[in-house]
Image (cartoon, rainbow, N blue to C red; front, side, top):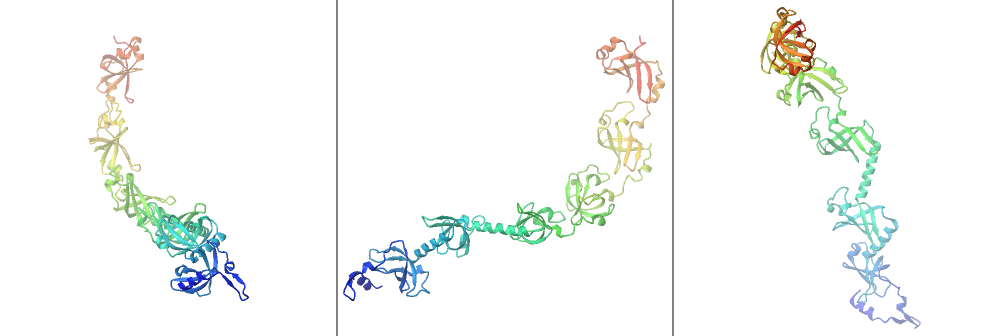
Length: 535
């Protein structure tokens, strides 16, 4: 409409006459329009900047062309919905909006068909503070940044212009506001995908997946909708110190389903199960008594683990390492990656355990020991260890002999070996017993000397009066030494009542006594003494 047309329209008298001459009230013929209504209009004129629309009112409305998302395809005479912003502005023109009409019609259509919790298509129009504005069939809805991605906060710019499903979270009729969530839809899709995959799983089935994440205890593999755990122990039949030795994130891998739980949706996977188990016929490849070479893979205080084949490890206990180096620290003898010769000692296929020996690959020094050290042989050796019951003497490399405390002295009662010997002492002893099978060599220290008790009975016949020294008292009597390291017992029955009442007072240590020899038992090394008949 030109400025001239507008002026003519404004100055036109609303009173006129028809063909019969009767006066007509044009105001009465106009529709009753209200601001905020959506009405239908007809396109009168289209320019590059605007579109003129007639709604049947006394003035047309001019709408910016951009509200029609371009004028291409729009023609004069087309019927369009418009929103009345103002019936008459200060210049008497009707102010209309195409965009608000679409929004109002779209709002009514959306809220009439969808409610909170429903899912519908949305196209992201633009990024705003705190999130995105999405078009729901002509109605704008707010998509918060926190609800745009499945996890965390992603790059919102990547979603602008994209179309996807969203869930209606909140509808505010008063403000014509809608809040939607893409995250809820993604979570629902993920859950449905998981359920679909888990329904298709079968124990023993092989599936392809992609390594999604790696931890110290294993790797998580995406099977297409659900993640399964490939534990480090199921990656290889061989030793794996860390999952990164076998896999890396992004690797495509075939895995076997070991187990799954439909309730918790936990899936256990296996990789080594796709290869033959080397333990199935290990006893055929490594029979007991066979020798082989292996690699030290771990050193522990109690022994070393040796890999004799990929996936097959055996333990060499510290006791099976050397014939001669007793109780040695394995770390002092071996280190990881050392190559060692071993012998297979035992196999437990069920527990996947093999016992190995290193010393068995060397000559056994116990073979022929009975010929080298017959009973009665005098040997020399070094004391290398003391225990409560005796002293161990190294006779030769790999051969130890035990001197029991009962074989250390003919006359002294030895309570502990340290009373007679100390580590490092060079000693001479007599071979008492040899057992090649049990690898035992018994030695005697006192046997190097003549048993003094053999002559005691000859020197002290029964009734002989001897002089001795009190060494100690007991509840049942007094011990008296009549010769160096030769003691006899003066029992309380062999003294008068006064003497027997207070032994500690009557017979203090070092007291010299005259005693009578009652009886001598040379075999048991015992002497019975008496005070009776002594004046």
